[in-house]
Amino acid sequence: MRLLTISDPHGDYAHIPLLVREAEKTGSIDAILVAGDITNFGPDELAYELLDLLEPLGCPVLAIPGNCDQRSILATLDASKAINLDGTVHTIENVTFAGIGGSNPTPFDTPFERSEDEIGMMLEDLLIRADRGGGTIVLLSHAPPKNTLDRIPGGNAGSDALARAIGKVDLIVCGHIHEDQGEMTIQGTRIVNVGQASQGRSAIITIDESIEVQFNNI
Image 1 (cartoon, rainbow, N blue to C red):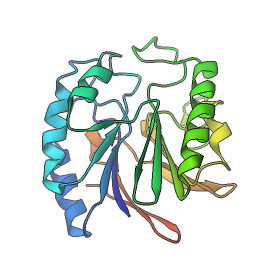
Image 2 (image 1 turned 90 degrees about the vertical axis):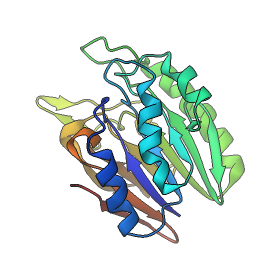
Image 3 (image 1 turned 45 degrees about the vertical axis):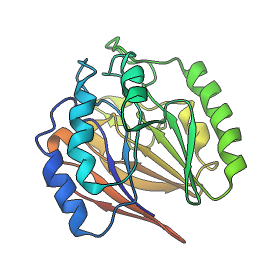
Image 4 (image 1 turned 120 degrees about the vertical axis):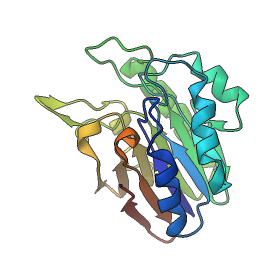
């Protein structure tokens, strides 16, 4: 399975068509993951514009909101042609995707923040549900786990609760921390911060017997 993964367009979709064309050049894409901050504090309807730009790939789009999206975007995603993955699971072939949108608390009081306790409870429920499906488990989260691809000036901004997914899922796809695009493996879990789409960054992830990551930057 080949995934185009994007995050943090923040309502600026100027680079999306080229990211899509570059992804097409690498071969067929089976699904698109959108890891949040679809808008920059709204309006929610911008999500439809993004989905239209992703349409040429002709595959399912699984999306979650980010901390800079309004909570009302959940209803927009529900009404759209995308799969709203926030707080639920969805299986394609032998890969089960689970989603946690928003972020852990920030100093900026952004619209869609969740307490670490709420994130932890969501994660516990999703892991139980995802495990029933067997196969590969992918966690799509806006925020990265604490101390993994979450560096900002002065420290690390990831989620302590999300760090508990490490060793329990095969792949974590995230964004949120624009400065720290990259990938790493901890306790058998591949973690990918796909970068800021509004700056022309994304990643193509291939799930087969192993997980391969190719950054698709323009």
